[in-house]
Image (cartoon, rainbow, N blue to C red; front, side, top):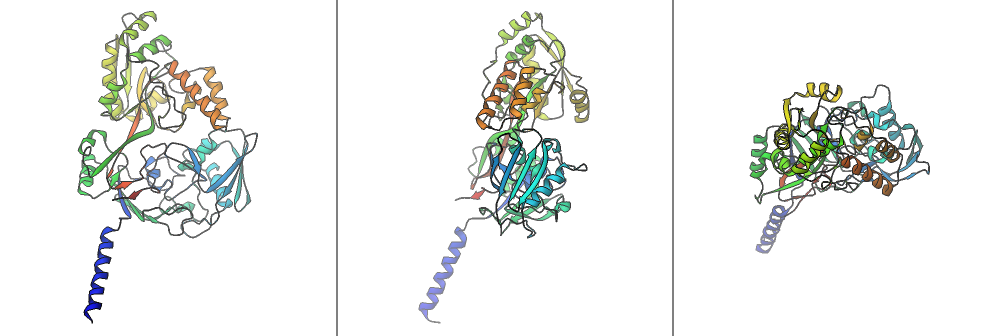
Length: 492
């Protein structure tokens, strides 16, 4: 071999080696606290299912973005009839499921007939009750006929409960999920991990990642060590009490956002003295949200003044409605006939944010004359006594369902708020599809329930992600459950 040729080959090898060294990684390992019981989001309620498969393996006609807004999914566009009862979707062409079978309108029809069937086990079946008929007009056009207008119809189509499945594979999706998403299921080592790989024939934009491994790590110390050792590249929701390990460490980024978990001091509006607006206003003035957030969430909760997620486009900041003012609280209690305050019970479910918040609120209320007896309960007892039997004075709980302000229009709901104006506004909201009008109505309801101090509005549960500093594209907020992979990528 000539010296010139030998030098050229050596240079080429050096360039290849340098290129390999500079190449960006395309795989990710994500630590998650809970292992899903199955992998079919249309047949189970566990959040852990959507964390792995939502928008990754499975897709819906539409998808929810990080702000909670509805975006096109398998449907590239849609029209709504003037009466709000017919939604017609135009589907993307050339879409296939991961087993190679084609996607078309018949798959959409099958999905929703299965969801609404008498033997359906879909956890959110009731949300889709307005659907009276699904018609496959042609392979790329599907129409939904509703029995009544439903302003949340498009949002509900974007939930994990409404992802599209195929008749050929639906029965086995719990163990071997087959969807149309950018990632295909590869393996599930139970008790350890789920592996997904990029689906080559994916119909949409290719993600930067080629492989994603979800590792199940429930223990905070173990997760901390795995992150520090580089055994996992990130986690979407890390224990707030341990975040200090990663803050200020240039190898990591801590992403703090909000979830759909409105944490409230739920109040039994049916019984005295809580049926008195002045008493509820006094309690609202007695609350110091920042003290509660600092003590119960280590400073990571987002303050709220009403029952709505701060990241949502409809959110109205009403935290100033009843500012912390113990003197005003005592004046209101006196006006309500309780110059010396009163005693009440505070029943607490077995979650840290509730138990810690309860201790702080008891101290805050004592300063205005309200003496609280803290009663710790297990979940089964809380669900029976508080939620089902409504046997409580006060409790603390996070409501994690998206866009659940409609619970204030149900006088039979556990906190017993009965306001005909809110019920009328909510009925109109449910029947309205115009976005501007929906926002106005939602904000009017938010304002009324804040003014009525129906509950003590404390904070939105935070999403506290810890990620390798070289990763970008992760969701900071969690308007729906899931760790969406499509935009995640490595950078230098």
